[in-house]
Length: 248
Image (cartoon, rainbow, N blue to C red; front, side):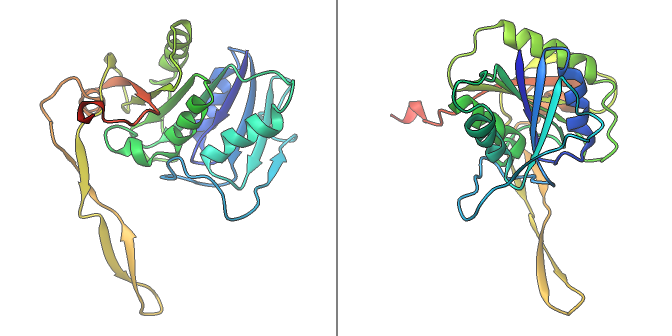
């Protein structure tokens, strides 16, 4: 199998390197990752300038089974570059895309901001099965040991199932011991008190994005947020079709 891997934390993050190691059991891995952090880029693409694509042949994880490329683009750009440059023409098609492991939850409304999931939506646009993995911590040295066995298990399960066009999966794991797996829906919620005013060293007023998450349905036990808050892995099917059908 041909597996494409990307993320939004950049190739230097522990999450993507963990994911590459796990995914080599499924086949040949091609990594196309941002050359630095691209968090909260959603499905943004680069339209105002050129993109680069550089192969890392001397990286410790590069091998016969792992090819690694870096770009100055976004996670969505990574997928487009892979499909239109590395797999252009008659070259082998990508069998599936895996994005992450993201440092930070992509549950609830975080889904719409996520560069990790932006890459998955881009793959789904092209009919490629896609899974985004995240862990509920922003720590750079996050402990993935409890999550790791589930990554391969869930990948096998999802790939063995029929995946309709436009569908991808948003998988979020708690930190620490895991009680099990829950299939969930997106939790209703929002961010508030999102802007913090500060003064920089030159005395200028500047604004920083911060915020507090507000769960609109904390008692609902079928949501992604409830799952990770209660030590379960959340598996949420998503779609690129954003039509509000009930309003038609």
